[in-house]
Amino acid sequence: MNWKTIFRIQGFLLIVISVAMLAPLFFAIYYRGSDIFSILISILITLSVGLFLSIFLKSENKNIKTGESFLVVSLGWIFAGIFGALPFIIHGTFGSVVDCIFESISGFTTTGASILRDIEIQPKGLLFWRSMTHWLGGMGIILLTIALLPILGLSSGQLYNAEVPGPTKDRISPKIADTAKILWGIYLGMTVIETILLMFGGMSLYEALCHTFGTLATGGFSTLNKSIAGFNSLYIEIVIIIFMYLAGINFSLYFYILKGNFKDFIKNREWIFYTFVLIIATILITLNLFFSNYSDDYLNKFSELRSYKNSIWSALRAAIFQVVSITTTTGFVTKNFDVWPDFSRLLLVILMFFGGCSGSTGGGMKQIRIMIVIRNIINEIKKLKNPKTFVSLKIGPDIIPDFVIRNVMAFFALFVLTFGFVTMFLLFMGYDMITSFSASIATLGNIGPGLARVGAIENYAFFDPVSKIVLSISMLMGRLELYSIIILFYSLIKRKI
Image 1 (cartoon, rainbow, N blue to C red):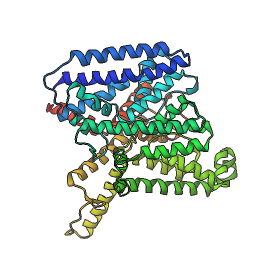
Image 2: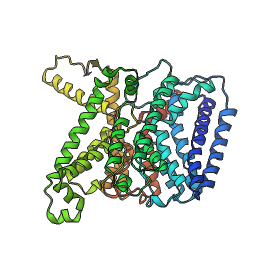
Image 3: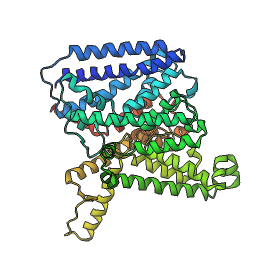
Image 4: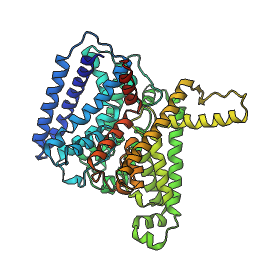
C-alpha cells in the first residue's frame, strides 16, 4: 500500500479546499458577519494540514493502483466532509460536531439534507460556504484534483475511473487531466451564465451564486427557509428548471455541442430516456393535482391543493419544478409536495431512484442503469418464452457487453439492499415508516427532502446523533456509488492493495 502517495493527494485536495474557503471569507468580510474569524481559522488549519501532507509525504512510486484509487477517492470525500465542517464547528451556531459534519457531507455529496431549523439567521459567509460545498462536490473535488495532479507528477487515470459516476465513462480527451479540465471548464461556464440570468431576476450576486451552486451541482441548499418558493418568481423558477435539467445531463455531451457535433447529443439514448421520464412524470402529476378528488374540507386545509384544482397552469408550474428537482436529485422546492395526493407523492419517490444521467452531477441510480435493468428484464422474458433465442442487450445501436450488464445488475441489487438496511436501521431507532423510508432514499440518492418528518418544509435536525452518522455514511455511499467503498473494504480484507 503506497500510503505516502495516498495521503499526499489528500494534502493537495485540502489545499484546494482551503483556497476555495477564501470566497466565503470575502462575503463574511463584505457583510461584516460574525463568521470572519471561524472561516479564517478554518483556512489556516486546512491549509497547514494540506501543505504538511503534500510536502513531507513523498514517494518514489507515483503510480496509483486500482485498489489505491478507491481508497484515495473514499478518503477524499471523508477529508472534505470533516475539514469542510470546520467553519461550522468553530462558529458554533450549526449545532454539535456531528451536526456540522452532517451538514458538510450533505453539501459535498450534493444531497442538500440540512439540520438547520432557521437558515436565514445564519451568517452569510457560512451560508455561502455551505452552498459552495455543493459546487465543489458537484463536478467532483477529486476531478478537480485530477486536473491538477500533473503538478505533483502523479498519474491520475485510475482516480478518474474511481471518481466519475455511471457504468460507462466518456473520455473526451486522450489525457485524463485534460478531460477533467474540459469538464470543469464547461461547469464553470454554465455557472457564470446561470448566475447572470438569476441576477436579471432580481437576485443579488450573493444569492445568485448560492442558488447557482445548488442548481448546477444538483444540491439544493438555499439561503432562504422557504427555498425557491421564497422568491415567488416565475422567471427564477424557469431559469432554475432549465439549469437543473441541464445539470442532469452527461456533461461529456456538452463537449460534443461545443465541437459542433449535435448529432451525438440528439441521438444519445440516455438523454432521450431522461427527457421522456421528465415529460411523462410532469404530465401525470399535473393531471393528478388538477383532477384530485379530495374533499372540500381537505382542500380548504391545504390552500395550494385547492389552487391546483382551479388552475391547470398552477398544477403544471408546481409539477414541472418538483419533477425536475427530484429526478435530478437537486431538492429545491417551490411547494410542499408532502400534502399532494398519494399518487403524486409515490411517483416523486420513484423518481428519487432514477436520478440524473451518467456523467452528470445528479445522484440516484442513473438513467442508463435503469434503462439497462428494464432492457435486461425484457430480454429475460423473451428467453423464457423461447429458450433457444439469442437476444443481445442494445441501447440504441450499441450492444452492451455482458460484464457491464452484470455490473449494473449487481449495483441495482446493492443499491436496493443498502436502501433497505438504512430504512430498517431508522425503524429500529424508533422513527416512523414513511420518514425512515424516504430519509433512506433521500440520502442514498443524494436528494435531500423526502416525506413526513423529512418532507419539503422539514429538516433532519430531529434525528439522534447515531442516526445522523448512519445517514452521513449513506450520503457518502450514494455519492461514491457504493462500489468505491465496497471494493475498498473487500481489497483491505483480502490484502490485495
